[in-house]
Length: 433
Image (cartoon, rainbow, N blue to C red; front, side, top):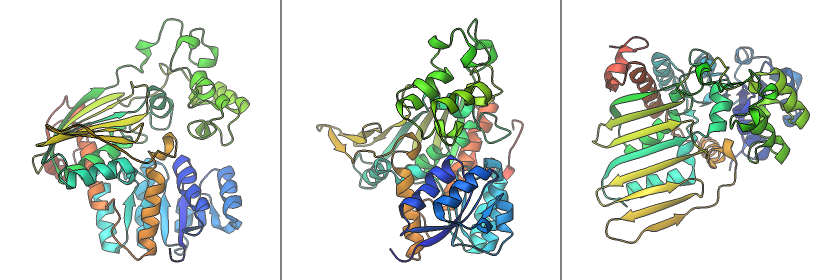
């Protein structure tokens, strides 16, 4: 690796601090963080200490940082969903390459504006579609390119969000309301739209979608349920109990030593006492049937791609495990992934099943099956070597966002079939057409 690339980070939340800043801290030979921006003084102080930054390099917001002359090679935009474009466009004009958290924007025309600005400014814009970089999806792509199952005909992808993850992020958490952030299909599943677009190797031509908010509403509250879990007489029997998720759950609870995400969202330094206090006072202690959420808790999408490949996609809150499932069906066989065990089963017609065991996944939930670090390795290495073509190009990333927004439009319009080209051109944002 040549000399480290330099980076500024806007937004020190879970993604900004625990992924991008963490990577830079662990790989100083690859990345040097020279400035950060976040409205939380404690988060700025933590970054200042971690990277030995002067006070002058720690900004209260990304707008102030972007008023300065260009400070680094790359700007990481990890602010809130609806701030992304307001920060990304000025950063491009300043001459920064961008590593942009998904989603780009919940507005079609803003996505297109960013794509056009990237080309006009001659800068690299990589959206954090990390699934492409995982070993398992990279291997699937290679198998399809090699014709391991013949001509690809159909894909069936399921995003198993997990009951506790959905309750954390989309009922109690920051992404619970579409008008404040993004529709769930965009905020959570533009990853999946991107994967299907990538594996199909062609743009999506048309789609339709159904789904809705079926469970996490007041009318479904069990008899005797309180507004907060800590004061609820039926909490011990509720799988969505905040006490159980953040304190007692073996995978996610702080009492089992889990101090990273999701507990780190409730408190920067999670302990039993700080989490209990957060559940008593903050939004994450609310009953899942007494929140102000409005995003869908399950959704299905049917897609047709321009090369004849078809696909179905399901995203659902109602699963025990947090992972993705994929079956790809071809003219000569099928393949299926087991993401929990990082393996692929290839079944060529008339032959014995072949099981490909990949390297064991080294991270937990928030690392996307190893994709976060692999994405950073690829992005940083590409820029250090003078490259201009990230594995996740802005053009294809915009395609995936338009797919997600078209799917939400279809869902709101009762499953209406949507032609992607017309949807993008019309910038449909409201009523059914």
